Length: 138
Image (cartoon, rainbow, N blue to C red; front, side, top):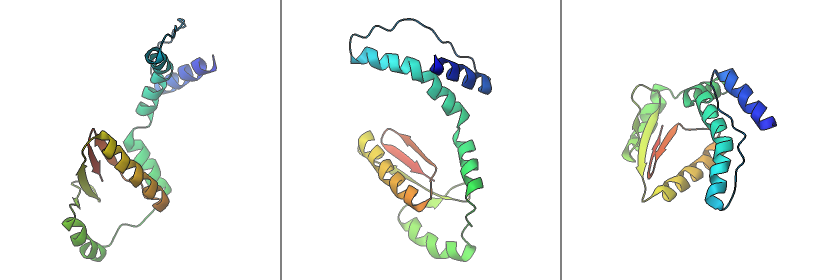
C-alpha cells in the first residue's frame, strides 16, 4: 500500500500516469518471480530515470563542486601525454574523452566498476556511456 501511494505521488509530481493493478501474482519459478519484481519496481525505475536525467545530475553536481578548469599553460603541458594514450578534446565541451573496447560486457562493466571506485575516492565523477563491450568516458 505504501509503495502504491509513493508511486502514484511520484508519478503525479512528474506529470506521469502509471497503471497499478492489484492482480495476484502466482509464483512457480525464478523467472516468474523476476517478472513480478519488475512489475512492481519497473515503473519506479522508469520514473526515476526520467526525473534524474544525466544533464540534470551533471548540473547539480557541478553546482556543488566549484573546481577550477586547467589554465592554457597547464593544458599544453598535460594534454600531449594524454593524447598519446588515446584521449582527445571532447567536441563542444571543456573536457577530454576516450572510447574503450573490451572483449565482452563483463570486462566493460568490471572496468567501469574499478574506475567508479577510484573516481569516488578522487571526488571526480566522469560522464560515461556503456553499450555491451564499449565504454565512452568524458
